[in-house]
Length: 379
Ligand code: BGC
Image (cartoon, rainbow, N blue to C red):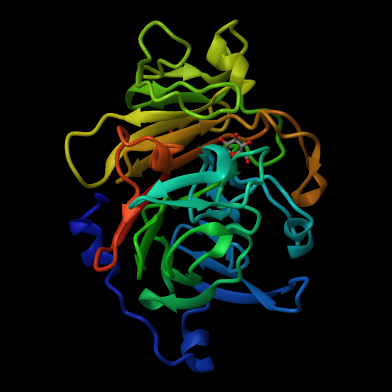
């Protein structure tokens, strides 16, 4: 089912796991890879903050609590670095509850209607955590798991593993998941997801970073100029569940096939924008085959920062932080409505109940594979 045979990148990244964690080995690669304590969870588990650094000084800091991308510092057109993702300075901020800042989402990204689905004639009941629906994996999704972390690829990448047990949040099958964050010298942050199961199950993994290319906390994102490579999107009902229709974007505020400011049409009296309180929709990406394809390009005109998103996935949730409500984040910055946007690469929401959507079923013997690249540059 899952696309993404990564011929080009497989060669670059390989799977050179460091079997020994000798301090000397870590010393030698401190310029690329570093690790520091990030505190303890409520159950006393120690978690770390890992920082990847490339030759241009770009850094990505990731914690093994929820696989959260805590900070991402990229240059503007003057070479000035700024942190372009929302989040917290300390683990505590994340433990108190938050709208999935930077987190790995699973076992199922976005919503499953009425928190249930039927697979092979068996109905599975999930833990509802948004009214009667399941959102982003349930009450304790992958965003709240403590992952096992390993430095790989000579310090250019962090591999996170997690075993989601049979029945966790109601999902069938033991699911062994790996998520690898890699940072290369071309300012590309790549996330590879793989998973295997011992029972038929459903899987849909993503990352929930909120971006502000002007710098986190620096106002709203309405001036960002967005292009999305999608002719269609999946309209939703009042509970933000797709109706099943694949609707043309032509003539609607969802047409981002040419660049538009986020703010240009966001307050239009459009039924779908009203339901989402802004953009909160899955776009059906235009693809010509398997493999990585350009999904979106975002430009922040003041700083010149550009982010491109490439993915193997068929869909992408464009969410404009409509539900952000004065959260105090990094450096005491206050995140208000629309202070960040998410581009969550994914299979379509509620696919387990929509047989007409691309399948999210994973069977024993198959491997789930998904890759997304966030590529940074300036213009
Ligand atoms: C969903 C939004 C939700 C947000 C934070 C997005 O993926 O589509 O509706 O509010 O995540 O939970």
